[in-house]
Image (cartoon, rainbow over all chains, first blue to last red; front, side):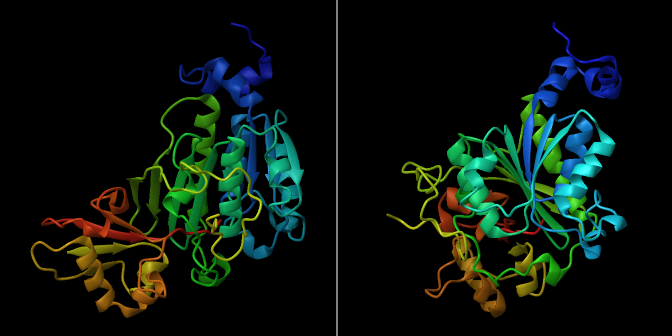
Length: 270
Length: 91
C-alpha cells in the first residue's frame, strides 16, 4: 500500500484512517476528491465546513451573494465581520483557517445555463445547496448530462428534503417533473427558516458527498429523505426512474439548450 | 383516512393532518377529492386550471409513491396512510 499521507495528515485524519471503511486509501480518495458546492448559504455552510474538515481536497464554491447580517442566524461559516463580504470569499477564508489541505476554487457568479457546463467540468460530485428552483433544475439537468452525481438538499421553515441523484438512478425530474410556478411557494426571506434546520440537512448532504467520494455505503439513490424538525422525525420515501423523464428517461435531451430555467423550468416536448 | 401534508401544503390546508371520510372500496383519488373538498385553499394550490393534480405534487400511500403503481386509482385499505408532498427550494 503506497502512502502519500504525511505525518500531519495521518494525525489530522486519524479518526477516519483508523476505520476500515475509510482507512488511508479512503482518506486519499477524499484528498483527491473534487466537490462543487452550489451556494454558500444555509445548506452550503455546513457542507463546506464538514467537507473541508474531512479533507476533501478541492472544494469549488459558487455563489454571487454577499454576507448579510440576517444570514448569520444559520450560515455558520460566515461571521459578523464578514457582513458585506462576498460569500465565496468568506467561505474560502473559513476553509483556509480550518484545513490547509483543501484548495478552494471560488466562483463569484450566478450559476446559469451559459456557465453551468464549464463550472461542472472537472468535479467528481456536485452538492446542490442553492435556494431556488431554476438553479436546482439546471443543476439536475446539466449534471446528469455530464454524468456527475448531485447531492440534493432543500429546506422550508422546519422541514427538509434530501436525495442523491446518481447517473443510472432517477433524477430530480423523475420526482418533480416541473417546478411550481414562481410565487406558489414562498421563499426563506418571506417565510423564515429555523436556523438549525439547514445545519441538519446540510450535514446529511455532506455525509452523502463523503460516501460518494469514498465509494462506501448506501446513498439516497431513489430515496427522498424527509426531515421534520418540529416532529423530530426522519422518513425516507422510495421513488423510481420515470421512463418518460425528459432528462434521464428513454428519450432524453442531449443538451440544455432551449430549456427555459424560469417559471416551471419545463422541458417542452419536441 | 388521514392525510399528512408537507411543507406549504400544510399551510394551504391549515393543518399538517387532515382526516377525511371515504366509503369502502374507495381509491386514493376519492380520498384526494374528499380532502380537496374539505380544504378549498389546498385545492387551489395543488390543482391546475384543468383540475388535474399538478406535476410537482406527489401522492404517497403508506410511504410509496402511488404514481409508480396504479396512481390515483389505487384502492385504499383500512389504516392506509396518505400523504401529499411538493418540492421545496430553500437553502
